Length: 387
Image (cartoon, rainbow, N blue to C red; front, side):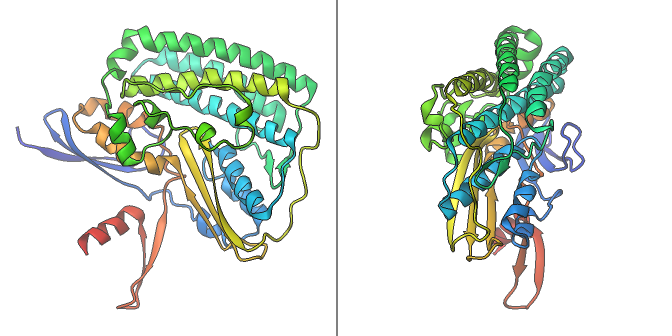
């Protein structure tokens, strides 16, 4: 049978964001895969260099909807390190709580979407129901169910009251029990197993070579987690396991996320037990000393990195963001090869892709011709290959 090529996207039939996947197939088997991104570029990095540090905090929160807290946390950590500002103990614990709440929210959202992708609508409905518990917690703390606006330079905006603590403990107990139930479901339910086991396979060694991060990497064996390799906040004061799976497929990545929900519930309970009273925010200077710094956190999809360069003014000279999805795309393309066309949606969705936070544009000044061109990152890479 002759090999055929076809696109999937940019108006994607399975994902809510536009991206262009290109496949070569031999019958029903994928033999090659490529991707073109850049359809939802929003100029956030450039915009950060035109606004002051406080205004940029709101911009960074909107890099990604489900990871908004992780982005502001990483941004604040970078600037606090550069400015030499010490964040109060209680504020760091509250940041940990919000960090893990968002991890629970994100992983449950993904699990529901995964059920939808494989036609397991009952799983989708159950997870969506249980997800309300964590969204209610986020709402009683911040007033919002998304984009919580809790991180500020030097600390946090909202404190945790005793009434909130009781509600959080109750929610963590319920969510932990439900996560254990979902672990059993995805491990035994034939509907899910037939669409997840041995689908989207990629080895741990290959994930390392391609730079994969987060559950995409840990679902194939390697146990890299920023919270343990480069401890931040007070993660060195709580006990939790770096969850990994040797399955190297969609099922392995699913189980890693469910296990991380269980661990996140335990982390939050530990934080509530050891969190002391005190201030929730310190003073932060209007101008940041000249210098450059990087910060990293373990966002829901994996390692998130912020680079900030200051020229001594109240406006950053450069803000650069390396999101986890960008790191996971090479592995995603490889795990699609050798699989069936029907498995493309769930295999690709297993990295939990986000393109609004990944897409970048590059302005290229051609010294020879004096022309200025704006292009997406893949176009720039292709240009380099052609030359």
